[in-house]
Amino acid sequence: MLLGCIADDLTGATDLALMLSRSGLRTVQVNGLPENDLDLSGIDAVVVALKSRTIAPADAVAQSLAAARWLKAAGARRYYFKYCSTFDSTDAGNIGPVTEALLDFAGGGYTIACPAFPAGGRTIYMGNLYVNGVPLAESPMRDHPLTPMRDSDLRRVLQRQTSLKVGHVGYPAVEKGGEAIREAMAAEQAAGRQIAVVDAIDNRHLASIGMAIADLPLVTAGSGVALGLPEAYRALGLIDALTPPPRTIEAPPGRAVVLAGSCSTATRGQVAAAIEAGVPHFRIDPIEIAEGWLKPVDVLDWLTVQADDTAPLIYSSDDPETVRQVQERLGRDGAGHLVETFMADVARPLPERGFSRFLVAGGETSGAVVGALGVKALSIGPEIDPGVPWTRSRSGPDVALALKSGNFGTSDFFLKAWRYLK
Image (cartoon, rainbow, N blue to C red; front, top):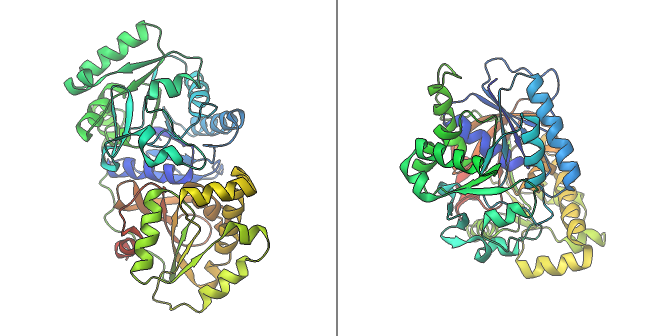
């Protein structure tokens, strides 16, 4: 193994695993701290999916270091800390503390921060993050129920989380290519700045950044930077050859289901499009769960009577105002945990009932569902939309899984995803 990766949520891990696979590294994703007997023969990169984005910083650091120690023991020579392309982290958040801890673990020195993912509409210019051309603080992320983003300047956001000095490698250097980026990073390091936010507005920039940072022991970024790293590693002689990604994936026979827990704008649009197209649907109301009026068996009974050739939609997605009202009544964390636990309880018995194809929307929901199914490792398949592949379990029940970050995917995602399965 060359590259050991630590992702702060499940869908983010899948996104990164896809980028690495697409760019030529043979990649496996593991969910939670890997088992010691995991077979890594023929594998170039391992992505460890944690659930650390919104937990206490000290806990996030402890989990991330445990993953890093396992990856080191398994032979990792480089490390990659993956966070969301919208930098989901409050002023008391985890990106800064985890970066500090992992940088020290990797031997100190210098690293970058670059959540840019142009294919998904995430770009960085003058240190500011844009979502589909809109400043982060003016985008729908402003109203995220767990990590509302109210500042577009990543330098300020990150500096509030870390004692390390945060600098910047700007567009002029990035536009000139890898050598100019290296020179700019060296200048930042000479000025005592140990983390640099790096601008990027297209995939050409990501390739240049990859060439400039291939020798760094630790990279911190979204998934976009992974597009340029494999070729850079090959050029440095760290890997002999790149492996073409899979074009198709064999899916086990069985029924399909969609479980949507995200309340992001993208997922709400996907829910609306599926309902408009006539997809059978069941709405999960957190208040009804809390009051005991709605139980998992009610959803399971409903699923039983749906046609076998449909992909029924079970969703809790709702608009920001309704989410706010629910959180006021149940608590911010309490409302989310309630829905995640409910979705997990629905998912757990589904393989025994003939369901083998799962499309799950939302990082927290994906983590809960995969945990309930007992899936510990995933093989990476073809890309459905930027950042979202089909996967197939390497442990636990034999299932195909599409694990979608709430913000990702086109409006028809729930309708078109199935055509990529064989």
